[in-house]
Image 1 (cartoon, rainbow, N blue to C red):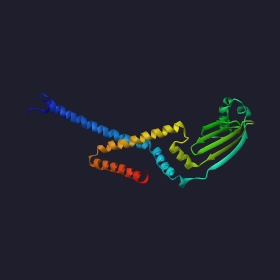
Image 2 (cartoon, rainbow, N blue to C red):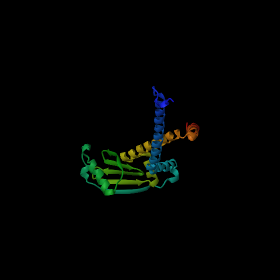
Image 3 (cartoon, rainbow, N blue to C red):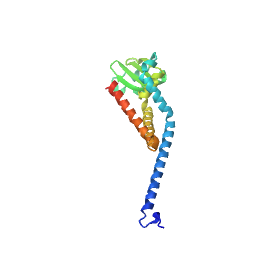
Image 4 (cartoon, rainbow, N blue to C red):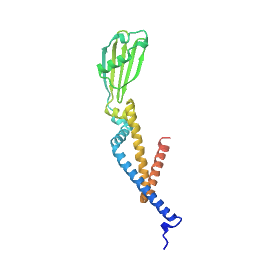
Length: 219
């Protein structure tokens, strides 16, 4: 009796090996996609929840708005730092560090302006602002610090406003995680024969619904 797997051409044996390799590849791809989908979702659970919640609070900022807390401070600093003819010699670093240390200023310097009569320094952070005006003749300064509340902090973090490069990396990584979770979900459903068609129909329906909403309420 001839052995189909050992004939001279070897084609049946090769076909069987090819089918086995293809099945193993599918199984491995499905397993890797499932693993990535589950663990990426768990690793990014907290940050995804954060962006989901703050997306809602940002969209309804008027519901969660708090009255800003404004604090006014005045004081004196070394007049030599500002009382110089050459504006290039104004001691910017010393001024900023003095204001931070003396008044507990937070945030990053967003503006440092030198005029004929005064120097203005602005600090901004998530839900936070501080503006300082310094008299160039005597070094006397007036500072206004404004805190906009916890929800404003969270909303600014959602937008990445005044949050620094470190937080910008968090947003980028979160975006990558969200994309990977979505893509691995699509790959997973490709291997579910009973749910594949309905899954893609639902995905297409979601795209169409969003597009219709855009055409109806936005465009």
